Structures are given as C-alpha cells and as structure tokens.
Length: 440
Ligand code: GAP
Image (cartoon, rainbow, N blue to C red; front, side, top):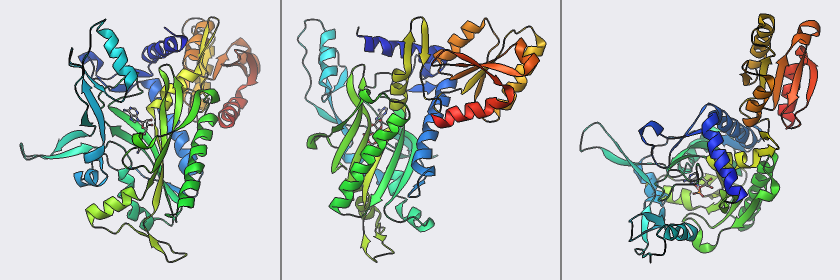
C-alpha cells in the first residue's frame, strides 16, 4: 500500500472515529453511495460553504444567490438534455454480473484482477441514465414520475427572468447556488468522492454571446477558482487544470476544464469550469415557450446570453482538504486546516476538573467566546491528551485556565501548528481568535 493510500485509510478512520463522516444508514447495513456528516463534519462543511458564499456572493457586486427546489417539473430535465444524454457507459462482468463504467479502465482492470487468472468477458457498453427517479402524488398508481436533480444548475436557468426582473443586476452577472444533487452512479466509491447523494456549489455567470467575451470570462473564472482553493489552504502542488477532450465534454459544454487533485488513486476531478454557451436558456425557451432573452438596457440589444459555469462539489473538496491537512509529526497527529474552516476555533480547558474555581472561570470564558465562535470544551484526563484530541480535529487554539489565571487574569493559549504556548489576558482572547481567523 502506498503512503497516499495509507493516508486515505487514516482519514476514513479518523472521520468515523471523531465524527466527521459516517456511512449512511449504518445500522441497517448501509446504503451504498450515501454518507452522513457527523457533528464535526457538519461544521467543516458549513464553514466551507460559508467561505464559498462569502467569496462568491457577499464580496461581489455582480453575483446574487438563490436556493431553488430540488424537485422540478420533469419537462425541465427534458429541456436540459439530461433525460436523453446524462448517461455513463455501463458494462457488466460476465463472470460475476457486477456493473462498471466502461470509461474507467483502472476500475475495470482492478476488477479483472479479483478473478485471479480467469479470462473476464464484458457485455457491450450500454448507455445508463444517471437521473434518480422519484414519484409524487397521493393516488396510488397515479403518481407522476419526477427526477431528483442531477445537477443544481437548472434551478438557476429556469429562474433567469425572475432574477433579472426582481433585481437590478445587469449582464455580465452571476447566480450562485449551493445544494444537494443526486446521481445513480454505477460505481460509487473512494469514500465521499463519488456518492449517489452529494452537494454542489455552483455559479452560473451570464455574459454577452460573443466569442471574445465568453473566452475572457472562462479564463477569468478558471483562475479565480484555482486562486480561491489555494487561499483556503490547498497545497499548490496537489492541484492542476485539465482541459476536457471534445469526446468527454458534457452534452451542454462548448469547452470545459477541470481542477484536479492529486488523489491517492491518481489525479481526479474536484470541480469543473464549463462554457455552456446558450444551451440551457435556449432549450428552456424552446420547451417552455417562454422568451428567455435579455434586453440590454444600455444598448437596447436583445439576446440570449451565454453561461460560463463554475461547478464544484462540496464533498470532494472536503475530502481533499482533509487529505492535505493531515500531518504526522513524530507521535503528534494534527489536521492543519485553515482556521476559518476548522470545526472549532478554540477549545477551553480548566487545568483540573476537581477545582471548582478553575472550572467556573473556564466555563465563563467559554460562554463568552461561544457568542462569536464554535468553542470546544474538555476537562477530562491530562492536558497532553486534551491537546492530542484537539490536534486531531484541527482546533487551532487550546486555552487553559490555571492557577495563575486566578491571580493575574491571564490564560495559556496553545497554537496547533507550532505546539507552543503563550500567555494572554482573558479580555484579549476574543480579538486574538478573531484576528487569527480573519487573517488566515
Ligand atoms: N453543473 C455541472 C455539473 O454538475 P459535473 O462535472 O457533472 O458538472 C460538478 O459535476 C462537480 O460536482 C464535480 O466536479 C464534483 O465535485 C461534484 N460531483 C459530481 N458527481 C459527484 C458524485 N457522484 N459524488 C460527489 N461529487 C460529485
């Protein structure tokens, strides 16, 4: 097993043990391709999404956010092309009848290896549609079939006119959205990398339908996304761009580039930037009969805009952030997460659990800090063990209330990355944590 593969195993076990990610429906034997985020995972994911939203919506003048329904009129999926073309090539192993994706040669080869020496034959590839079906309605046998969204994108496109009419935004502008998507993946795997239920964080950026304009914004968003991943703490050498070949592009894309991560199983997709042209708006116009064109208030021109999309998963960056953050330093294991993403910003400890004056003051400090930050509490065992437990979940600061605190009002603040302590007055703690979180 390579070091990278061992690292993945350690992350999967840490995620379960410490409450980041649990297998979905575990007590019933699980449900393949589903995962539940535990108390720490839910915080990490929320922090990631908050950072994304801040960067994409809050700090920009040219982007608004929406939160569209997961269930849509099925016609929307015909219009988007997903009913016809959202497929993967499926092949079946004739020895054991397990199904795989024909376009994943490594997975096919690995499977052949499990039949030791036997000649493995495969069925011809068939198109397998990834949309997950559901049934709505109160009369048995009369329910209508709908699809759970296979990408979050079309909830934005169908609202294009509503957004233009209800805001003062003008082209070029973007619409950001975060939410769940569902795919009937043939081979879910690699922990939360490929699941059947997952989350996406997307931007649809509408521009004038001109080649130069489209190219300019495509290049802009490519670089913008790479820079952001580096800003939130990715190791630069673990990321790269990869342009899609014409035969691997999704049905809606004029051209596409992935940002890939050097995963334990090799370079693989973390997110995609797609030039969707006028595919979506034009098709929704055609299928709904509603005019989806934009009237430019400055020039008086009327056109169907082009869409430059940045489409990230949430789960894949979470997995890769954990892999990048995992650090072993002799006996010490710590998650070197960006403090902005770390589930807890600080942990508060009374030096001794059986000294009421220490416990009382520590609780007061914790309760004050809690008003602004997620704060952990630990009064078990010795301080060394408490540091270990916080290091393992990436808490940037540990604050200990000791006997000196009772005398001079200072506490020790221990830094996760340097394992060093300094003393700080209690009244400076909030500003100190705030500065560290803001500055990172
Ligand atoms: N709207 C465009 C779109 O959905 P995509 O390349 O199919 O494009 C975008 O998906 C991102 O969504 C991927 O880069 C990945 O991060 C995430 N994603 C896609 N399928 C996934 C799955 N089965 N499990 C986890 N994440 C997935």
